[in-house]
Image (cartoon, rainbow, N blue to C red; front, side, top):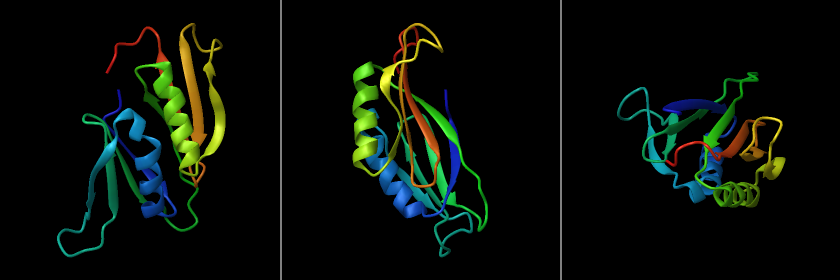
Length: 132
């Protein structure tokens, strides 16, 4: 299970809007926009959550090639399909169409997409995993 993860991106506002739309079918929503410098300083962390796990975006340092691959659980194969479609409609790039992935395990169904910075996201339903 994911508690939280930080992703460094070139344009946090754009990536924030993208992830809000892409992950909406899974119940993710805006958690908050915060400044580590305290009140009156520039926002430097944009957060979304699903009620228990959170993803935080921050501005990528100039010249950095940081990135991430993040697997996010879905309760059904339909959620995998819907989330993948939402991600592409929001401007994401295909990194693996929805379907079974028997090379990983029987009952493993997933789809993958990338964001504007090449970060990779896999939406996965494992038939044996408990529903969230």
